[in-house]
Length: 239
Length: 239
DNA sequence: TGTACATCAGTGAACGCGCGTTCACTGATGTAC
DNA sequence: TGTACATCAGTGAACGCGCGTTCACTGATGTAC
Image (cartoon, rainbow over all chains, first blue to last red; front, side, top):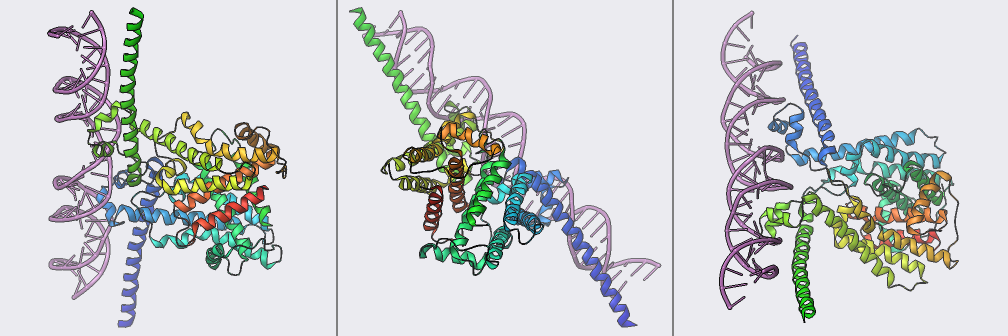
């Protein structure tokens, strides 16, 4: 009997703790959601008091959930990288594995679409760094998801023999490109990966230019222009 | 006699007005210089009071020179575009006219060098837009200087027959690219200009990634990596 | 040559806000025995 | 079954700051006649 009672009591305790943890997690989510909305008005220069006001709470109550404003910012940054990563992975997964160009273009458009749907979160991670804020190391796993997907496409292309290694690269650069290969595609020919990195940079450069206003009054059909440039780079890669 | 006297008096008046104007212009320059220093600490979220404090003045005194904080920001933005434009034009002019690759690379490195020397001014013009600030139209002439230099290199290449037009482009994109041609190189083959724009975007994407920390812990020799990517794009353009 | 006047850079106080963070506290909920 | 106790989300006041902008003013300089 005593074992059964103990077991029941234990379950109960665990369950209660779970409920408490769940309520807590929901609260954290709501705070982040409200904070995300605020990024729009104030940029990275987010105000805790404004967030609290919007939630009908007193500002000090937020300290139950985040030890400081910077921790909240860090959480938003990681969430943003993950939202982008999820969007990119999802879009790429829908394309037939052997359609390398399709997969590459799906990633490009997923990045752009996500950025357009959440411009302030995009700015938070790819815009100017927040003054006085230094990102901790724990953003890294979330941050590399997109580039890992791109690397996977190249790796598949090399595996199937569809992609051939282009120009070789000098040793100074090779060392750095090799470091990247270790993360996104071990064994990738460095010349190819180097071109891939160029395309990756162009992809985000394009999205940033569009979002940050460099194309205003110049490019009318921004989606078409983007698609054209991305397709050109994909072709250059040999996809 | 009266004509001589009048003329002298006139000269005197003009001279006094000039002196006053000069003192004013120097003051404006100093305010901007101090404000530029402050961009480093606070980002675009510049504080007039902090600037005034640094100058040993009371904050309201600044209103003699700038009608509002936004006007000061606008002045800084235009100055930044012009500083970049001057650096780029100067570097490009030093290279022999027939060395198209050299000219192109000089522009690339000038952009990067300037950005590294004035990272906060770079962020002001190519980073996330300042929340609540809308850039007026008068930044445009300063903003296009760099892209005009790049266009000039392509135009020279086409003129000398060294550059051939690559792939043609679809009509949707052609309209937009043609609009750009009107500014940076009337008569440029649109396929070539489109590639040039891709390279232009990649150039700034690369500088932004470097400055905004995307290459941290990944690319050690950032200058070599940059040079490699820029040279690859120049080759792709046919330079 | 000497006085009245205009210009205008810079002052200082004030208005009406905002902020992050700390701290002692209330009050609900649920546990322990 | 009923009382004592622990947990902890949220409050409200306070600390010590910051901000952009307005406004009446002082005081130097230099002009007009």
